[in-house]
Length: 188
Image: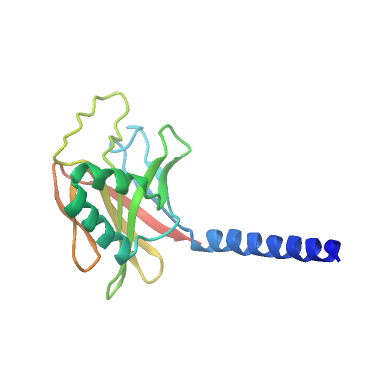
């Protein structure tokens, strides 16, 4: 009797684990694009980037961030935001570190969709000093993807974000011109 219960529980646990793993795989969306020469870590050739979105930030999560900011202040807001892990940005075949995406939103448009991604502010220029400006603590990536899964994007290395009562994340302002991201494609 106990052996049957253990076998059934083990089979149930394996099925649940497989379903959880498959949901994680299917929830992930991948984008690829290129920074033109002189804009990425390598000034000689285009830098290829892989952007993995594990999940999109929900309206409720944005409203929770607003509540944390209003009740506990900016520092606790940053701690809460940095605790969110919605994906990563990875250079392909070159030097560079993986960066964590702390927020990601998918907004439907007439021609496709706009993807807004938020990470900590970061410099792509290896070997140069990057002076962090507390007024612009985030890196924001805006992707414009058409209905065929192709598009372009912009990377703002030092930006400020605004959270709205509608549960959306917007770029409020930035401190330097964006870097262009070309040949953006969606990989499934």
